[in-house]
Length: 378
Ligand SMILES: Nc1ncnc2c1ncn2[C@@H]1O[C@H](COP(=O)(O)OP(=O)(O)O)[C@@H](O)[C@H]1O
Ligand SMILES: [Mg+2]
Image 1 (cartoon, rainbow, N blue to C red):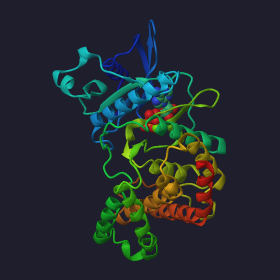
Image 2 (cartoon, rainbow, N blue to C red; image 1 turned 180 degrees about the horizontal axis):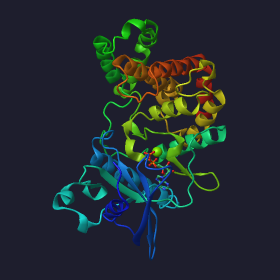
Image 3 (cartoon, rainbow, N blue to C red; image 1 turned 90 degrees about the vertical axis):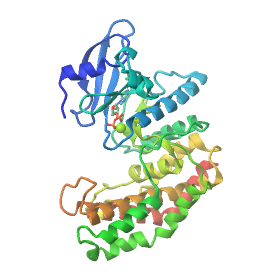
Image 4 (tube, rainbow, N blue to C red; image 1 turned 135 degrees about the horizontal axis):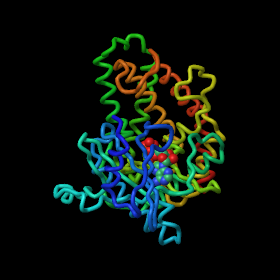
């Protein structure tokens, strides 16, 4: 739903800003991502980011905001200790004005971090980091390197974070859970498509054991659990005007998991020479240069601090995450295209094939990927 300027101003005014609010406008091309920029004037006036949080994707917005508060407080301490700028090198969450809070909100341990409006939508605010730059696509090895460096630094800053975080998205990257959904989906055969998919289902079945073996190492602690970002795309990293990483943003998905999932997901998206739904499979490949650049950037921040099991399985995590995506696209196709938005009939099957080609490319280059990891982990 669209909000009027007056409604948006009233929402922004629930939060504690320095300076009085003078304007609010959508950031980026329209209302797509529900991000607004709030202008204030007066002494110490700053700009702010106001966001409507998608509670359909994140059913527990209070839990999510609590995670963000804990994680950013931890990073802020690290940045300050290192002599950095705590207002630019980490997100600063803006709290509610106490006088706008109800008694119930005051009792809620996350009540100061969000506002729930009369339509049931959740809003949160943070400081706008001035002079920052974002990129939509990591299309050069240098940006790939910087992306790896940004996520690596984020993980390094949180390597001694021990407070349990809320699991805001259940079963994220948990292949055991995905397989249970998968088995049900095949048995249900909701769209009557299973009979035509013997080959594609074979791709999933033939790798099931090795994928479970990886996840078992996470479950039994062989691969440690750390704080992970879970949405590592380049547009979630802010850079300064010299092109250096300032901080990682969009912390909505921040949870505990294996840090390898962040690595694998970044490799899946950064290194693909084609599109996620490329119809021309010849376009799709894992670029070894991009892999090398991301790995180098990531390990520049993490080498010496990862366990042997993490180093050993880092390259495999790219196969794991890509495989999971093949499974998810194919499962949605089998279910009758219920989850992913499709632009044309068969779109999910096209995506399945394109991600499978990427997986095959990773499998073919796996030995080289492992060598690259070993080289930069030294
Ligand atoms: N604190 C901030 N300072 C400066 N720019 C920001 C800030 N937060 C978000 N942005 C900009 O807004 C964009 C969208 O914000 P993000 O939190 O990533 O939302 P989404 O969930 O829509 O991706 C970012 O890519 C960045 O360009
Ligand atoms: Mg984002």
